[in-house]
Every structure is written in C-alpha cells, then in structure tokens.
Amino acid sequence: MTRAQLLLLLLWPATAVAETPRNAPAAIELDRDDSPAGRSELGFDGGAPVVGWGVSTSLAWLAAPMTFTLPDGSTSEPIAHRQTVRLGGALALGPSVVAEARLPLSRQTGERLLALGDPRDLDRFVIGDLAVAARIRVAGTTRRAAFVRAELTLPTGDDHDFAGESSWTLAWRLIGRATLPADVVVAGSVGVRLRGDEVIVGDRLVSDELAYALGVVAPLPPLVPLWCPGQLYVTGELAGIVGNDVGSGAGPSPIEARVGILARPRATWAIAARVGRGLTDDLGSPALRATLELSVSP
Figure 1 (cartoon, one colour):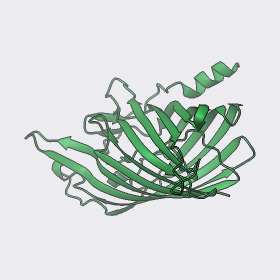
Figure 2 (tube, one colour):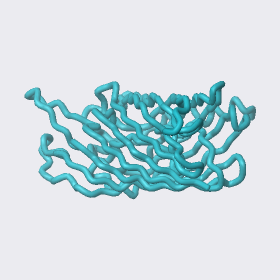
Figure 3 (tube, one colour):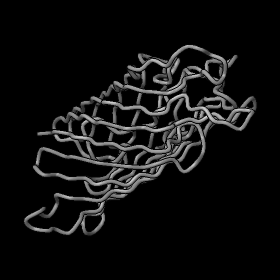
C-alpha cells in the first residue's frame, strides 16, 4: 500500500451508520474546544512541538452553543453559559511521537430541554469526556512537517446535560505545519471523526463528520522593555465541521473564527488568550468563546 493510499484510507469518511439513531437530544458534547494538551498555541493541534513533556490548564467561557427556535418564534438556550477548567498533559515519546490526555470540568447554566417538554433541571457541575490522543510526525523537519493524529474520547462525561457523548468517538487528522520567514507559523488540519452512536438533536442527526482547521501564528516586533523578540505573538484561526448527510438527516456544520495573543514570558511558560464566535447558526457554533490557557514544559 502506498503512502497516498494509506492517507486516503485514514481520512476517508465512514459511510456506515447505526441501525437506529438514538433519540437522545442531550447526549452530545456541545463544547467544540479541540485545544491540544500541554501546548498553548492554537485552539487545535497545529503540530506544535513538545520537548520532553508539557502540562496545561485552561479557563474557558462559552456562550449559547445551541439555540432552539420554538413554533411561536421565541428561542430557548439549553446551555446559556458554561465555564470550563480543562486539565491536560502531553509526553514526547522520542523525536516524532507525542501522547496526550485531557479532561474538562465545567459549571453551566441554561434551560436544558424545558422548552421541549422535559422538566428536568440542567446539572450545574459536570464532567466532560476524557480524551486521549497520539500524534506521529510522518514527514519533514521541525520547520516543515506533516503529522497524523489519532484521538479517542471515552464516554465519561454527563451525556444527559450536553457535556459528553453517548458513546466513544475516534478522530483521525492529517496535520501540516510550516515555519515561514520572520518566524510566521502556518498550520492546518483535516480529518474525520467517527461516533459509536448516532444521536438525533432537534432536526439534526449527529453522526460521523469531517473536521478542518487553519491557523496562523505571527510574532510581534519587540518593544523593549515590555517584551523581547520571540515573546509575544498574535494568532488567528478558523475551525469547522462538515456533518455527514446519511439520508435520514444532515449533521450540524458549525464554523468558528478565533483571534488571540500568545505570550512566552519565560522559556518554560506559555500563556494564550483567545476569543472567537461561531460564523453559522448551527449546533455547536457559539455566540462567544473566550479562553485563557497556561502551559508549562521543561
């Protein structure tokens, strides 16, 4: 099998579907945050290096990731706001392999499914799904490289309150990263996410999906004594999903844009602040997302 055939097999969307989609409208993770553990650069894995190991903590604010429009024209927000602490760690297994794990812990407010006739209150404090991942560099050097990333999420979250999937998910991504002149970094990824369960949420069938992202990291000129060369960067990124259309329903296709500031005040610390919002009115496309993240590495 050639390398091209292998990559096509890894990234080709699955066409098989579950026999009967579950009518479980809360059994999904509404927070689409895909930040890798142990690295504070972009809101997705853009191939940033890990030297030895890295740990990270992020604080995130999410507003209105889903809104129902009712027959009378009014709206309902199952999740109005969510504040999340995300803990993660990464370990370099040689020069080309990185393993990681991350877990979100959240507090949230909202109506849950009250507008749809379900009187149960929304759980205020929830645990999200545990995610474990591995990334392998398959070509290139530290300045220009291609990676393959695999990520597995386990259904450990509160899937009755939009804080976890009803089953496992498995994602494959192909990542490209290049360092251009002036130390500008451009990174992108594309791949598929497979779900163990299909879930009906409103008029959407949440199933397998295609995921993509594109980001840029550019250094700011030094302004001594405020910051030195290589200490302050601006970031911009676009991330989206293309839902699977399986005949019985189309999956959500949210798109989100984010901008941010990345600071490296010390060689072992990185602090990132990002803010963004959804560009489409779809499931998982928030009215606002704000993230503050700290990572430490040797």
